[in-house]
Image 1 (tube, one colour):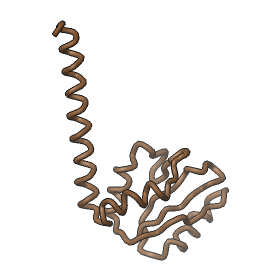
Image 2 (image 1 turned 30 degrees about the vertical axis):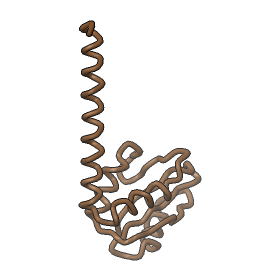
Image 3 (image 1 turned 135 degrees about the horizontal axis):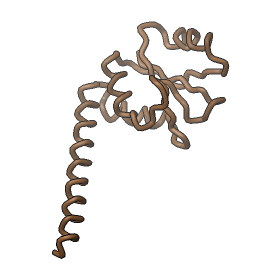
Amino acid sequence: MIYVIAAPEISPGRVKIGYTSKKPIFRMGELQTGCPVLLELIMQFNGDMALEKELHKWFAPFRTHCEWFEFGELDAAQEIADVYEACEGDFRNLRQMRSDVMMENRKRLQQEHMAKWRAGQGR
C-alpha cells in the first residue's frame, strides 16, 4: 500500500511518499512516535515498492530528504493522484511516462542548442 503523509506544521506542501505492507495508519503511528509535529495521513492507494520507487523518481525535483518532498503551493495530494491516475497504478507505465518526458526534454534542449549555435554562426 502506498501512503502519503503530510507534515503541515513544517510546511503545507511537505509530504512523505512511502510504502507499507501494513495499514498506512499504523505506519503513520510509527512515524509519529519520533516526530515533534503532528502528522496527517492524506492519501493511500494500492501499490508496491516498485511503484513507490517510481513515484520517488517522478517527484525527485521536489525531494527534500529521503522520502520527504516539498510541493510548496501545489496541492501534493492532487499532484500525486494525477500521476497515479495517468499511469493507471502500474509502475511500468510511470517508468515509460518518465522516459517519454526525459526524451522530450532532451529533444527540446538539443533544438535550443542548435538554434544558439546557428545564431552564433550568423545563419
